[in-house]
Length: 178
Image 1 (tube, helix red, strand yellow):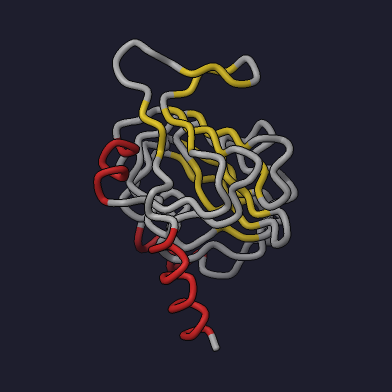
Image 2 (image 1 turned 60 degrees about the vertical axis):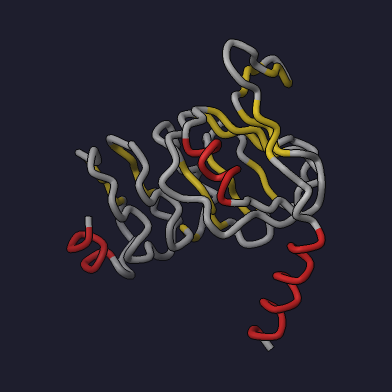
């Protein structure tokens, strides 16, 4: 049934192609909750990311995810973000003070950035959570159950990866890839 679900989601995504990232160009910045953001996602349930929007997002340093966003695009990687904030009212994702997008139901870190701090609640890290990220160092807390092999793929500036005890699954593979 996964195959059918993917087809359904792709069809739904095609219906929502007009949902775009708001691009605040030049010196203009958008303020939300006393924070300034380069990019703010439209407040719709499905966030689709066209190739054009991805190129714009790739140059952004800050990202805000509003409360109504339920589905994230799958190609969130190789970004230059230093700040990620999810609206506190979002029922599906949170960020807290972590500078990351974390799925609430599974406590999975979906997307990190160069200033991410992984909270103790996180149990899983998604396959490409930090892929291509400009992160220099990070601590993987002991509550994380596994680290997928490509979580830190192409993190060329990663100097220090501290893995607290009890994080055993995939560590050997991870260290070979990083």
